[in-house]
Length: 116
Image (cartoon, rainbow, N blue to C red; front, side, top):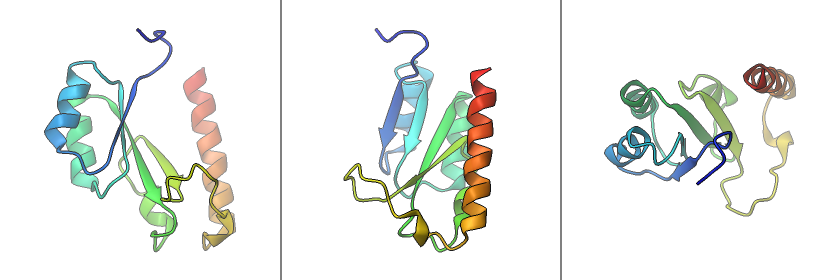
């Protein structure tokens, strides 16, 4: 019963891949948001079998490098504190402020293009 402009996002933590795929195929959700240890193979399979978009969340406190998030096959990435508190994380913990700035600019550009 959502307005057609609002995408239904299913949030998952290490869910069985068939559950995610079935919910996307049946149109129960439009996008899968993954918060667990789902790897590239998992993400690629969901995208290939459903043709739907995937968001992959990365816990910035556990990332050895921002490159891991940047190389994800997910359509969108989310940087998360991993605490479930809803509070912003200290972005200074990311090792390369210049890469973070580039990342944020690229994200804004992508969002802007998707709105057009």
